[in-house]
Length: 324
Length: 142
Image 1: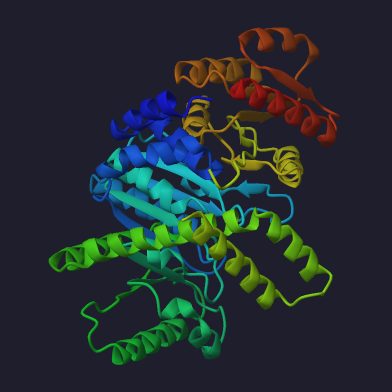
Image 2: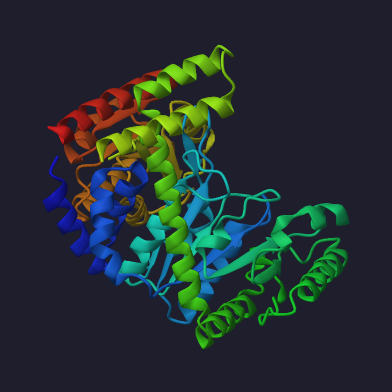
């Protein structure tokens, strides 16, 4: 396969905003096809403009329905939107059923909405392996907002906060007692809180709990200049989208009033580089013949994993010094 | 490149028109997931236009249409044409469900690549897709 010509053609299409080109670029990046990295290098200069928004929350909180409602509201405000909808891949077969489009069907024919379903493909933390890359592709295509809907998360799967400029945390009434709310790392992350299914029993209690947690969070962070709003929504009836969109705009203005927008983008890029170095360095080390030998020894309980790891690293250091 | 290329087959499954019989398509979706494929389900009451748009956005390799209420002679040729017009004519277009024998030739001529009728075993569908995918990847690599 020719990495060069095909990548240039796709990169040009991405920057021109062509959907088929963007779709192919994301596929290559998700598949770890070398052409994906080449496209990313070519389009990187065109990124940095989009407002990257995360939507996360526990399974069943109504994230897809809320995303659908929010996309409709943002379209009324004339924004162009790229949606990354993440669903879990099977850790056993690698297969996945990606069903988030079902709730967003009304946007399928809108030329200014691009929805992409992505499987986690082994990534933990609520995102897929390629979420960051897909967000960059949407950004380079010129979408004003990139909406990332995570898989249903538990108590600490909040990688999306490191990727998004603004993260919306979706909660629902009746999920658990106060201990659950305290444990949830979700309450420590996020800039906008939405209590969905607010027409259900337990809304008042949930609202009190969330309010208390946010109050304590504010007390613990006296330097925090953004006070996260706690909003009410009934996404199944299209209620609450306007206030959420207002809050998104307010947070974006807040970030741009200082250096928050650039700082978050920079932090995200650094985190990605660190991730790439981790993955590639580990892959390179584990390909050494010495690694196979040490893994066999660990597997047979002849050496402990700590010593084996240390020996592998020491060996590779000696090699590189020898080469120099 | 230090990380291996991983290319699971991506398939979009949809139902067109007012056909709301979901049992078959749900079973197929689960069987394909078990076979390591990524299934994008778009839901019911789709138009050919919606399916074609979603297929491009999702960059799937295969589009599978489940049809049990006789809209296939109108919808499937239209979908095949829309996919070609969108530059996505290389995607494999499959249909499954209640499709009379005498309709098959016309559908094939219109661009439906493979038709599975009632009684098709999920293993048969998985084997067909795996075979097609292996050939496609070999052709792409050449």
